[in-house]
Image 1 (cartoon, helix red, strand yellow):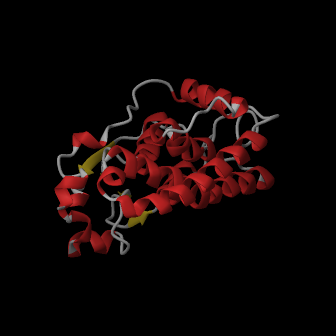
Image 2 (cartoon, rainbow, N blue to C red; image 1 turned 90 degrees about the vertical axis):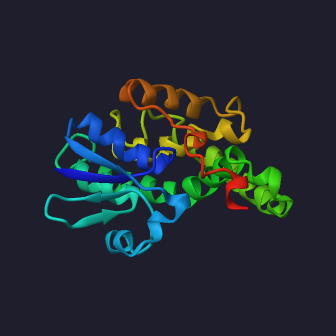
Amino acid sequence: MLTLHDYLPSQNGWKVRVLLGLLEMPYSSRNVSIFEGESRTEAFLKLNPVGAIPVLELDDGRAIAESNAILTYLAEGTRFLPSDSYERAKGMQWLFFEQYHVEPVIGSLRFWTLTGRLECNQSMITGKREAATRALAALAALERGLADSRFLVGEELTIADIAVYAYSHRAEDCAFSLAAYPAFAAWCDRVRDAIGPGYPVHPYSLDPHSGARAEL
């Protein structure tokens, strides 16, 4: 059976949980206590040299890291990864966009905000302003990309939508209003409806070690 090395508050882990659920693929889940250093242990670094979750461990012990690589592996041969070469490339375009413009920006701002790190560390304010500018640019790009399209690639949900949606639809967690992005907001509704219920977003408060004070 597949084993997902996961951390529930992570939206990178959430992406993989969603696709596994939509594909109805059985798997076991192993929580990694990242703030207690478990992702830096020798055993975990053998699975992922970078020391980050999620990691998908295959039946034979081989491992795949990086959430979007895992999505691509799982979606092979399914409706969530287009077989047409152009549409497949467009899907990869949005996966790369997500890893450069969404996850490290909106994901980081969300983390800093929800764990209280901004409040406790004023030196992060300059970085927050820079990240906020990049986040707004990412939302504007999504608004343009979705102006005449139901989903990011064609008319059906793909892993591109799952990946981009994971952190972008949480932009309001870091005080961004979606009112200026109606096409993006409508797409968020479509993705939510296509995914369906059963995939909760877990708060960082679930982990007592995640707060800013826990590091002091």
